[in-house]
Amino acid sequence: MGSRSHWFALIAFLGCAIACAGSPSRSVPDATADASKVAELQKACDARGMLECTYLGMRYSGGQGVPRSLERAASLFERACDAGEMHGCQDLGLMYQDGRGVPQSDERAMSLYAQACQGGARGACSNLGVMYQNGRGVPQSDERAVSLYKYACDDGGAAIACTNLGTMYEDGRGVPQSEEHAALLYEQACDADDMGACGNLGLLYSSGRGVQQSEERAAALFEQACTGGHLSSCRNLALRYEEARGVQQSDERARSLYEQACDRGEMGSCANLGVMYADGHGVKQNLERAASLYEPACDAGMMSACANLGAMYALGRGVQQSEERAAPLLERACDGGVLNACMNLGVLYANGRGVPQDEERARALFRRACDGGLQEACATPGQ
Image (cartoon, rainbow, N blue to C red):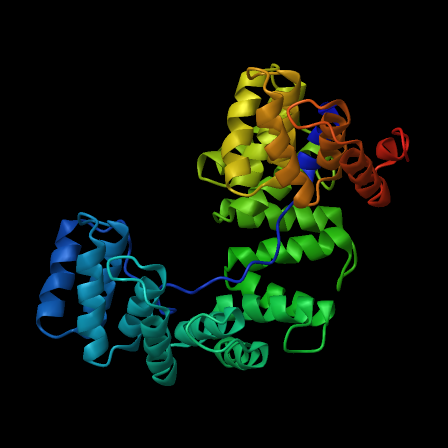
């Protein structure tokens, strides 16, 4: 009943996520500098060098050469901002948006981004665009978001703004839909070292949308983005190693990439790694390990992992059998669009296993899976 749902965990789930710019777009002091460099920044900040206050705040925010202190970082950003250093306003806005070191406040973040944007910090303009796109602290407006992204992207500005503008063109939000224009923007941002843009461009090359289809080019872009720390691109690169798409097939390389991304919190990679352990594909089969990978991925919203974990509970594979535990997992995955989960949940309802027997509900679930294109569900009784 459940093994077929493993296939769904191998789908690449990467979307073109909107991102926020967090640090000044100008060059930043070496993050590996020793304590003497930190002391120099502190001395300059004390002498009212407000850019140095911003850089020092960045170090406290990341724990680079100093003990990590978000409260100290926020204080330094505020000091710089109050003195007119716009990148300090930008970074303080990001802290208010995320509620790090200060109470969370979209309204305060928006005000700081607007101040910094007007003062020439283009990353702040991009962040303000994200807030308009999502309707956080301001009325939702795709058109206003596009305007801000364009301003921030123009003339070699904030690369992340070019990426965000690319997603708007790809999705046709606030502008006429154009995958060709999106590809140009992603390439511009990728060339400026925005790794999310490289990953998004890789997806376009993989599907041939807006560019000439090329799995080799897609794989190279995913490699570049993964090396640069874009974890979803590590997952997409691993998938290509599994399927020999644009690269030579290598289960070992795929496993290594999934583990690398999963260890850093990329739950889609955890789900896919779980499939490898469940099927013994490229690794020694280990059902307990598979279940332990599916669970956090499911908790994070990966519906394929919920479907696979539900199937394991239904069958008692790698976990103690519990159809009562299986049913809500399968229902969640079915509601999330995983057709095998709908069919498997239908089996539970048809037989009264873990749920009250309900043949009408079972038929509805089989019909939903069948109408969605799952042929196995079409052959179930009542279809």
